[in-house]
Length: 390
Ligand SMILES: Cc1ncc(COP(=O)(O)O)c(C=O)c1O
Image 1 (cartoon, rainbow, N blue to C red):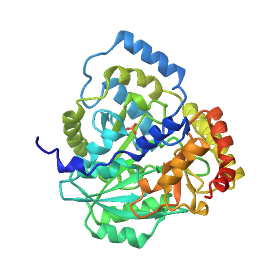
Image 2 (cartoon, helix red, strand yellow):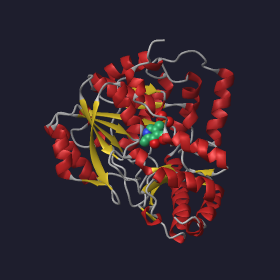
Image 3 (tube, protein in one colour):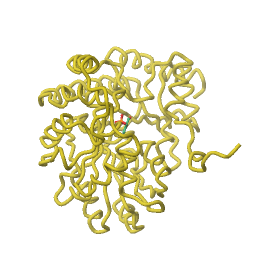
């Protein structure tokens, strides 16, 4: 039989999906794969019911249904402080996942280089492999996950075509400061580089941190390809609705890539999601309050358990330092944790380019009740670790 492509042979099984399997095997509370265990807002569920009954059920315009783009442009213009045109600045995609892939293929030719901060969300390297692009990794060093300006400058000197910016960041919970973003902007300008953003956690920010949209920085709109989605903001990861925002010149290419990748996002779900996009500002304030309570509840248990972690400023993940348990492998530690303590986490090494083995990632996009259950189990971690000689 013929060989499958070399490209696919470079992929390994997603560590997160493997940890989900391990969690199921041991009946552990799954704080590895990052999706909510609660329902979307009731108004969205009702809108989905109406759309299932009344349609549309056939293809929408490939770059997004008019109604959806209009509502999205209104919402994003308000939050980004830009005057976005629904007919010129948007492509609606199947989640930010497709948006990022389409952005990468729009910006880069095979053989080009892209800067990817490490730790990174695992899809970026897969996107690079699929589009034949070579990553240049720039470390964000724990515990504060700041970049070294000289290392970033060096990376730009390698003539990258784009930089990938995950802000707020998965897995670190970092929210880039305006000063950091202005530093990146100056380098992008000097080296004529695209900046591809992944801002799926744009509305999950913990005060006093503030999210700055890269595209809204002075002079940056034309070189920014902003990707985001409705997955996290409305707790609808399964609806697969995302988008690209860019200048009309870039959007023209993204439309073509997107058309051939997927034709379009689900038409009835675009129709239903308009209800979410039209929600008042209080919805986003309530979302932040709810996530702040989740974060504080979970971190409260981390404190009581005496664990060391970096306090997330955004998104819904926390990286916990396990070096005191003396385990040489974060993967073995996560398997032990799922089996003996009953909580599943992701080995941090799967997010880093560098050999970082002392961090594990929990996510806390769960009902408070689930977080309390997981927290109570984690309070026993030390005792169990002593018992098992860790
Ligand atoms: C940083 C980041 N980007 C993208 C995604 C996927 O988003 P979507 O559901 O919009 O494809 C995730 C999901 O966990 C994520 O953490």
